[in-house]
Image 1: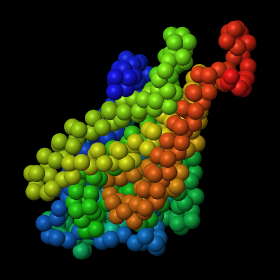
Image 2 (image 1 turned 135 degrees about the vertical axis):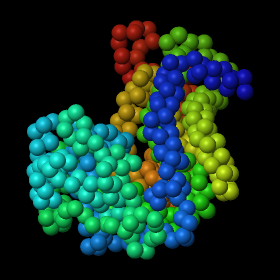
Image 3 (image 1 turned 120 degrees about the vertical axis):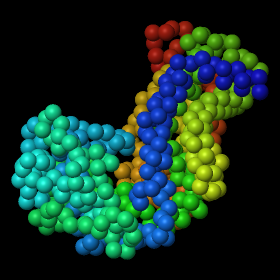
Length: 472
């Protein structure tokens, strides 16, 4: 324990370790915490996972097989979103798995305008939302798959300095379908009709997506995720989703999954810095000549350093969501619901820990073997190659060798449970691979302590060559 504590203190004094901590803090603050705050502020919104209807009637369940209604919902919803993006000149896309916003040039905006005119049959003034030219309170109404619609309330919205009509989220009003009860009037008439076929619509969306960037909201993959029987879309909660959230996830479980998703891309790369810096510190201080002859076994030394690196990496991962856990548990007590106080601990240990173990173990092996910073390049390449494809961000779609688990929605508990066996097998497989790499690292370290593997001549610092010699 003394040696373990000493290694932990070394890590805590490392600048690279604090780079990891600050990055996790930034992701938690800008990616995860806003979602918690946003959902708690709209508990009376039918689209929120917190929503509890007084009538006992929720939105209709979505069909997982695409049909004409889904195609119409996709065309209406995507077109309305494109109008909003065009007016504000802010377009979302996912170049590295995280959402980013792009501002278009004047020429690109002109291209988007032409596509919108083709899609809607509206003119430029109507699409720009000029209140002097058209009734802007009716532009942008959009039907919601699963029932209901959002309409822009009369008199809402404003014009900015550039003459563009700006609509804030609070300016929209939800109007339920015939099967829902609400005090709002049942008026779901759209102000325009889609003027193109579904095939032409897909062609236009592909062109728009290419203008915006990789994995934009209008790419075929993202549109399919949002509109074809999935819960990525911000639509009214169904009865099954309501039960999953309050009975399956017990509230905190949904946010624990989202937290793990938010930090997943960080822990696929930055834990390498912690173990690399720890292992190379001896070389930088020219301590190998003192460490190699010591009586402590190679296996014990490697395992202690590995355990210290993993534990110190997981420490901020476990601490950061504590604030939101208290907030969510306080909300659960206020409405008489029993939340899962251990949800964040369970999800981070099951979803995040195996990935941290593997990244740390691989970096450990390469650093022990090469005694340089090659592991950073290797883990960087692994980060680029091994990130799950965008079609997995909705969760429930797991592969045996997925290094990280994605679940970029507060819904989807049932989908996860349907594939929980593959998820468990994946995490076990990743953990076993990590232990195998640690064992190999101990073996390599033992051979190097005996003079077996030498990178570069120990008599000269100018001649670098690889030599495999036997220990006598």
